[in-house]
Image (cartoon, rainbow, N blue to C red):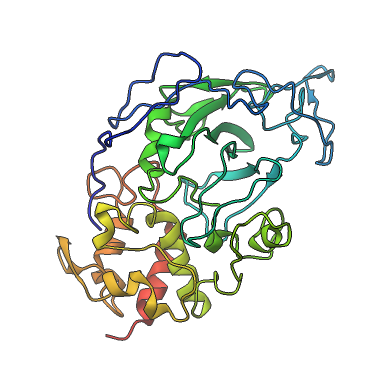
Length: 363
């Protein structure tokens, strides 16, 4: 794998300045705006206009040590007013088929699409979301909600230019959040680091794609709970139908799951039109065999610019220990680590999964 490129502002990059604010210092060279209002009934400071559906469990009250109940103030727009359990009207849960490794944190994911709006799926591999779309991802460690990240589309087009990215940290009593701009290390006494908001674009800069990574044909082509590809089709929320079977990664389970893991954990940087795409680990919709994937074409048996003793090919068939991809997956804390950010712990299960796939390849 090649190292992640340093970020620079692209020509035409615009900040969402719907509310005048100071911008966070950008550790990676990019700034994001704060506290927007999208003009569609979802304000960055208050969501009192959002109706309550009351359909998701719990009564929405936090319980204090004295047994008394009190209201809970969660991330704007996500929960019904006064609750941190009941979702706001139209907000629904979803889960990607192939999860992103986050040092073992559990995650709660939620999506809100504007009523009547449809996702542009004219390119099944690069969905374009309607203005107003909001996605939240909450990280849970040791039974505590640590942080919630929000991506909110406020402009037309694709990429970070059209989105506002915000980060909210939870308090110890789990009944309120506050917006974080510069990050928090070891939040709530756990090993989880809340990132600076400016770092969000490092993973969500999709170039020709829109910024959402877990809401896609490949990721929603499953039969689990919440929002799925089949459900979006049935509710006519997509402009162009996508066959769920065509969106499933081909191959036997060990191959499918390894390619899905690489798609979710590496494909956002190593995929499509991005500079790192000489190694392309993004999986396209409609493939009928594993050998058609870009991972096979650009990784299996391909010499690597970065080498290590005994490893000089990106993927060495039948030899996991000689594959540069795995050497770098096992590294942390230096410039050769992959992924290069947002993780401090090696994903041993992921390493084992990719190793098992490489072991099946014929030299």
